[in-house]
Length: 285
Ligand SMILES: Nc1ncnc2c1ncn2[C@@H]1O[C@H](COP(=O)(O)OP(=O)(O)OP(=O)(O)O)[C@@H](O)[C@H]1O
Ligand SMILES: [Mg+2]
Image 1 (tube, rainbow, N blue to C red):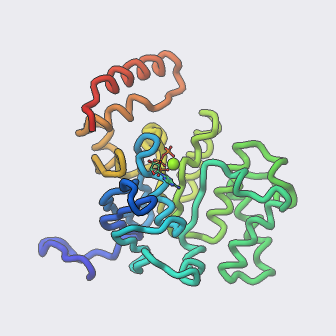
Image 2 (cartoon, protein in one colour; image 1 turned 180 degrees about the vertical axis):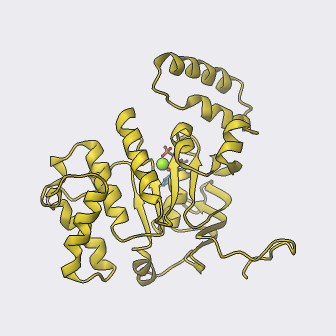
């Protein structure tokens, strides 16, 4: 065991992901964008990471994905310390640890049919050429895209469909953890609901964990078993989704909850007012 467990507790398998005392600074003298953040994600678990704009959510996601250097602290994935993984080590992780970002259009090559975009991570993961297009087609079918979609280009799909393509590309390698950074934020509410349902469906029976980053509590409530609330780079609250939402301990968490968009315009207006009232009374941090 790497971690000392209380004697009363049975030894448990290492978590799928463990972030320990993570600190990320942009520039040598800058303030910490992420300051002493620790959390775990169990196998098959969805952890929601919420906080307002600039609170450090994307920075944490990027550090886990190896896209952002870590100032101090550690990131463990599947029992391995990946904090400063080499390029080769990252490459070998690529199939197990994947990402879906807010704007798939910018990450999909416009000149490449999407079937090829899905075959690429399979090539990196060492899947034989003969299997790749079959696996790509299966992944596209799993996210509800019509047969033959693999031959089409990104511009030939709607925003919601492109987000499904991004999800298919994340899942095609059969990963253990997917970092979803504002993966549904750009979608209208009905498309958002479809994509959230799809994400929930895809994890069923797949032992698939998500780090689900969103500024919207309602979206997190739908998908996450546990929630971490971030404010200015620090965790202000964490717990099961039910605990945090039913009985938020922190003023900031209540502010975030009141700011969540809802489909009913009257309810939305009420929440906006409540939000503004809460913001006005927020203690200066
Ligand atoms: N490349 C960068 N260089 C310098 N500072 C950065 C950089 N990226 C982010 N920051 C700063 O780090 C802090 C956290 O940013 P981050 O993007 O992680 O927030 P976020 O919670 O994802 O916000 P949003 O909800 O708007 O996406 C912010 O203060 C931001 O200005
Ligand atoms: Mg962000």
